[in-house]
Length: 219
Image (cartoon, rainbow, N blue to C red):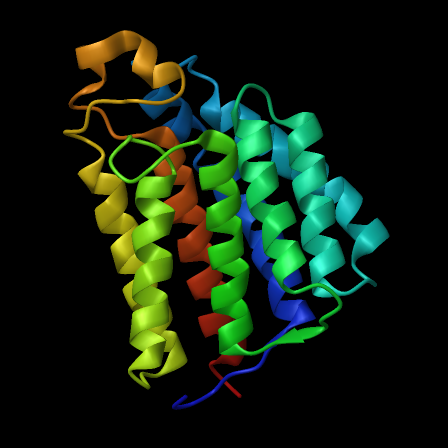
């Protein structure tokens, strides 16, 4: 791969820390998105979950990346309400399984990490593209990242492409009819609203790009 990049444990820890900040800053926005089609608590739940992650992180950050991510996932499962806990928690748990024992990651490892997390969400949520869920942001993002890197593109460029795909996937949920989760209960009234889960997933992936780009800019 062109411009192969090593992603360190420090990069992953910084990603998690920055994610907590970003979700806190966007908490009201996420809750406002959730209000017409959900329980109006997505931002509150995600902020609470990552606040708990930050309290647990110092206890596990001396471990390998896989162990850290699995600990993050288990914390989210036990602290985020509704379906969000199992879904986001499984994303990180399964992501951690893909990089078990590693203290640094290749770009192929990063693809495996994200792809494993996506498959976990699909398995737990029994959801597919077009169901108006977080999968609509994560699936195209992982697909584009893999294809862009396979074409020997610069890693940072590939991560930008990944983030753009997640953004488009998020926006594409607006005209969709929700087929899964709380939003599916409101039927056709879910049409015209951006999915909050796709939005928080986009923010998490965007934070990954920004963290890696910032930390590797001067290297």
